[in-house]
Image (cartoon, rainbow, N blue to C red):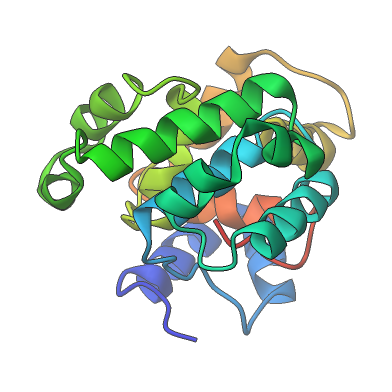
Length: 206
């Protein structure tokens, strides 16, 4: 396992600032965020995971990989929407995957430039693709570009973990979540990743 270069420093800072994270980090000593190098894979995997549980997403993704083992854009296009739906995708998500595959196959996205762009600039480009909103773009920033300070406030898992670990299961407003997260800067991605471990100890491979 190769963790991002900033990982150990981020763990030390977060452990010092946040007692909840300190305990979670101690409970997960030998795992870390790992880059998934293929941009199409990361984005397709994030689309599959939109607004469903990690378990459901993993099941659907497993069937998609059986259908298109290399997870290449042209494989998805050749499979066709009906076979994508048969893997468990909704009609809408099947359309999103097909549209993403077309963008990659036709070269309309400036993928090679993203590593040199700031977070918001990458998000602005990605959300032009059908089915990619801010959350999906943020998953790309975290899992592919390994950006250290992404705070996906719309992520249901992050919200659940915060409700559970900081408020005894009580729901709180996004404003309150922002106050909790203020001490994580500039390592919000790392804090988010560890909070996800409260819900699913095995990291998702986006």
